[in-house]
Length: 256
Ligand SMILES: Cc1cc2nc3c(=O)[nH]c(=O)nc-3n(C[C@H](O)[C@H](O)[C@H](O)COP(=O)(O)O)c2cc1C
Image 1: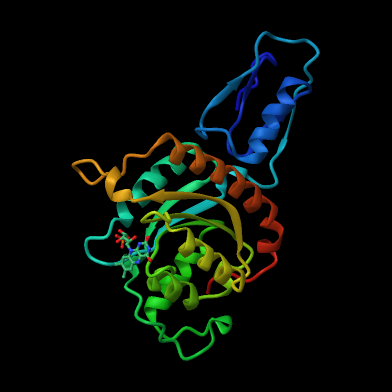
Image 2: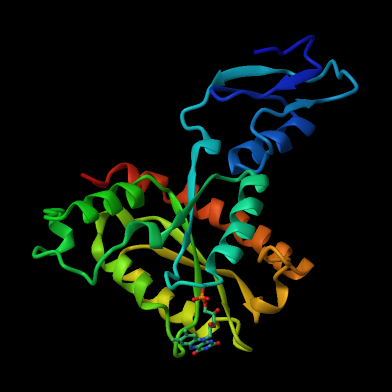
């Protein structure tokens, strides 16, 4: 930790500095979780004798909020990972969250097969316990979803059904894709469902029309500026909700 002569402010995980004037804007950014990258040192120049620097313990560390980017299509040959990898890379660089890429296909969840209601968390199957731990570890989610028959993909609906408390009081957003609709109908359907799981689906989203026209030779998704811009706006709003809902999550049971 180094405060130098009062002209240099360095933010580390457990401490922050406040000052007046210009530095208060910096503090606001840190509380919003928008500084990037986490190890960045911030400098205020020139030295201003009127700055009064105080150091105090952070009660909560904004940068520790966990985001999961969940790729929600599972079929062989799917385009989901191309879109999901683009968004995960952007989210990691953005810095509002610690970002994790989650591929629903890796969990190989069968059609819902738990005998007890998920509210009980009496899980009989190991695949459910693994999924429960994964869901519980996040503070917010971005679902990367295609549109199937004007609807959300069944793999996502199935995965949402599997657990309950693990989703509660967390915000979520959607990167949707499809034909001319850009998956909007799929995202709207999923928004309705997640409210039953006490999630907060934010209105901001990313809509991608015909993503197969945006793949390079390595099947990487190559975004338009509009995709990047809407993704960043969505992340900033998602971070506000993730912070605001933190007290509700703190008083609620999570995973087993
Ligand atoms: C079963 C099925 C139904 C589909 N229905 C729609 C649809 O209603 N609207 C749409 O825009 N695209 C539809 N599509 C096209 C998908 O948007 C496109 O195949 C996309 O790549 C699917 O995502 P995925 O490759 O990650 O599975 C459908 C595709 C499948 C396989």
